[in-house]
Amino acid sequence: MNAIILINCLRTMAHSYGAQGTPVGDAFKQFSNDLADALDKCTGEQPTSAGPAVQEPPLTDDSPMPFGKHRGTPLKAVPRDYFIWLCKQPDPVRHAALRTWLIAKSYMKPASQATAEQPLPF
Image 1 (cartoon, helix red, strand yellow):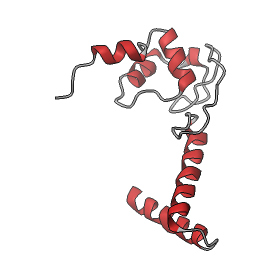
Image 2: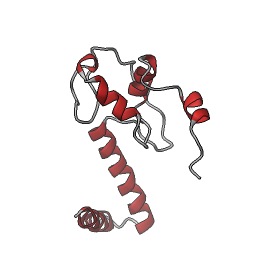
Image 3: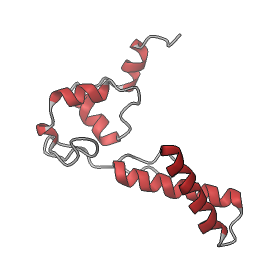
Image 4: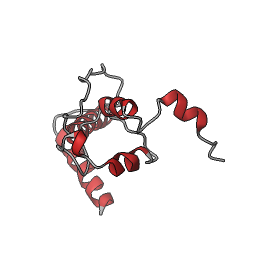
């Protein structure tokens, strides 16, 4: 199902940008940037492109959870087990302000400590 959605998105991109006379390479780059921006808005995560970094204000215990199952819930009301589960996921927490809050609350170790203790994958 996800492959069909991706194919339809790519077809839409090709038609909409191609109709404007945009070269295919430029159209794909513009589409990928637009898609990344849309995903960042949906997930509340920082862009991964080389663009300027946006400094977010630090999160407090009363700040809303920025994404996921508990999105909008004050951080102090999110179950502890959820943060433990989140920190154990293979994809590190990319939301910079949440990562900083999780480190301050001792759910996560700073990147320098976390990577030094992880075993090699082979």
